[in-house]
Length: 289
Image 1: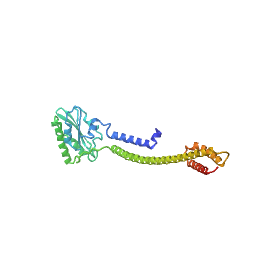
Image 2 (image 1 turned 60 degrees about the horizontal axis):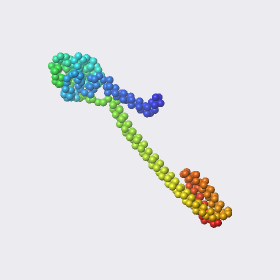
Image 3 (image 1 turned 30 degrees about the vertical axis):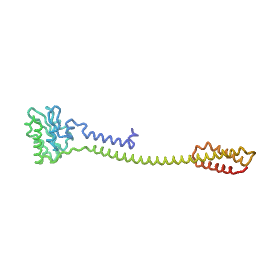
Image 4 (image 1 turned 120 degrees about the vertical axis):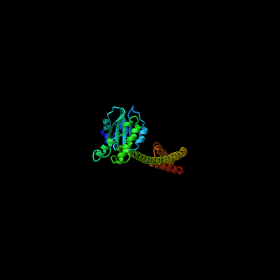
């Protein structure tokens, strides 16, 4: 493990694991169901609560307002506390049915709620649910009343103007950047490696063709030499005594015999030896006696 994580590849793998863990954590893997839904939506509907959620989403639009319709008897304060950073920059309202009315609990996540905007946040939390109790049986209409209250609070400056922006967390950007960089660097590396491999293959092919040509030329020269010796053998068979030709022929055959085991090799020296023997064979062909 030390050797693996001590290498550049191991460090890169460790960095990717840290980024992935950060991305999973910041994406809300440990969120409650309410926080997980409201992280990217404006309405949460608990199981068993009847509500046309798409219509409710359209009523709120892109306002900095999130509303959770919880089951009767739910702890609204705990639900607000469990939101964490999932609804940062919004005014969150927890609702649950209580007979013909609503139980309401608001928690502001607007900027500066703990500092200079504490008073504005208190006003917004107090006023956002005003007038919705008469619409307990019609939750979409209750949302419309809340939207009217929200717009009034915007006009009075209690809530900052502007729409809610839902953006991916920083680790997701980093992972996306790393993925793009990996694709670009990987493709560039493959391209350069392919070019290098191509050059090596071409060079090897040229070398093999050159070696094949040299082997062909050597084989042709050896075949010519063998034919010369065969021709000289007919003349040697008619010789008598120890003539100069007979001695030269025997010496040529001896050297050719020594050459045969080396014909499988491909060296410039071997080609030179074959050429020398061919020269000697030609001279013997012109000798007399």
